[in-house]
Image (cartoon, rainbow, N blue to C red; front, side, top):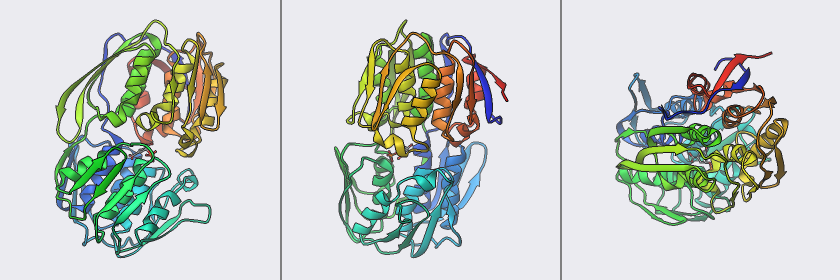
Length: 435
Ligand code: S3P
């Protein structure tokens, strides 16, 4: 969607619509960056091609890998850890937190100075949560005084050890595990809550010894071997389609979805809210992958999400609050203060937007309290430069009584470039340019 300002009017509910969902963002980032760390050629089938994953490709090139792209396959050719070279310039991570945090871990393996920066949103996000534990492993790493990017690492020597993280973050955990590949002993990372474990699974598939036990992961030093990855479809992108069905009483079918339980909290939430969710695993190699069919109820029921559940649906919470605004009774999200330091302050962005559409949403420091009502009105809303907010608001528009004017639809390119065209083509919303 090229236009930054669009007008959306509700279409009709999906009648057993089958949707093809793009590749998983977290897995694509890792496939690229693990390809950089392997010696030889890595092939990536069905990668997500988006602005964010393009940033990880640029990082791979900045550390010396060759990248080849054809329509079907993305190939990364690298000399692996030990052959990586100091970037010749500041590396621009754009809007991508995953790129920057994982690249900090990689920079710890590279002799010389690596400096990473990004756009205004990324330069507001907390990076000391990576540089501080890297410091505990003997790596010299710096942020600005405010704890944000630009960030710098002088790499080449990593000590093994155990790090206890104060925040549950798969990005931070992954950065430390990657640094551990070149450490002088095993690196153990303990988190306050279990987060997505794609890095652990993928490293194990590359022949690295990784031990996982609930909230603790240990990586043993080693050189990952190159493999051919097939990227499953992204449950965080599929969630917009599932939410459309749940909100409007329609039915959606999606295939080839990444069904890692650390990523499917939104499906459990949909069930609690009264949707019928059928999940069937079609294959399981590195990750379980399968079909998901969601059928919306006549009326959604309110529910609550707390800190223990947050990591399993952290990126879907903007969508959850859209559903809650239309559900019966009071709903609550708590323990989700992390949302304030995502691509935007997602608690404020969704609170402001839903209130503009007539919803009864109260922002809290760590979530929302929502009194569900029968319908949403039209209104003017802003994506706040955040891809997931833009797409969550398209879902809100699919069930709104009046037109929703959205500023910032173009940000969908960060994770799902074809979303607005596909959503309109499926009949969820009618889209025209607005002024
Ligand atoms: C991601 C982890 C999550 C998530 C982000 C992708 C990853 O961030 O919000 O979109 O790929 O590891 P945190 O784990 O830092 O919360």
